Length: 292
Ligand SMILES: Nc1ncnc2c1ncn2[C@@H]1O[C@H](COP(=O)(O)OP(=O)(O)O)[C@@H](O)[C@H]1O
Ligand SMILES: [Mg+2]
Image (cartoon, rainbow, N blue to C red):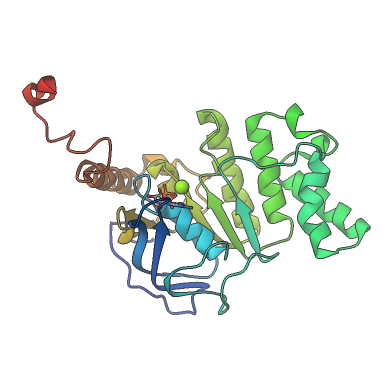
């Protein structure tokens, strides 16, 4: 039997070569018409192992999206180094990206949207068709291949976006709050869908979420960031066995304890951040709150 899952900080690296290495990265955004910048990330280091599902959590504005965009090579750090499979990051077929908004092309059918990354790669037509249908099947949308995005529900659109990210069979999948725009029930279906797809076709997944519940359910490891400047505050391991759709993972004491710990930590960070609208809320007495 596996040992019970407890909250623990991981050493920075495992036994095997990590798929992603982040070393001492710092990123400052210049402000329009101001000499002061925003230090979005400061001295962040992290190793992500092969085929790991890793979530980034933390208060709004702590640099999660910035970090993800750096992994994709869309923006570069001011200092430090990132290596993806030993190379500097660059967008390409080895990377899939899923955004919070679906970003489908409205004038293209579902099939054409999913085929798009393969057409960029110059794959031949028959092979593209086979691949597209295989991935539409995986996300349960085979019947909707000829529909347009406007004809689909939010959950279906996000499944198309997922198929599009997976179709080039990337070994790195970057997801930025992909389920945030979905209703609670659809979101839960999508979480299970993603678990199943990841189980079938392992890849490194770096998953940004606001939901600590979602982070614990899906991840092998959870990286908590603290804001201003964004830094790694804690790395937690989720020892719950995979696959997690086979049993009620949320009912496990390890799950409940991890979720509580994450949520308490985020609340504390937010209450201690003078730039947050929730600054010092917790510390207020009823009287001082009434005096505001
Ligand atoms: N392109 C940009 N220009 C200026 N500031 C930015 C830009 N992108 C992000 N920021 C700032 O950097 C910080 C981190 O942002 P972000 O990575 O989007 O945080 P998160 O995804 O954790 O909410 C925030 O203070 C944000 O306002
Ligand atoms: Mg973000």
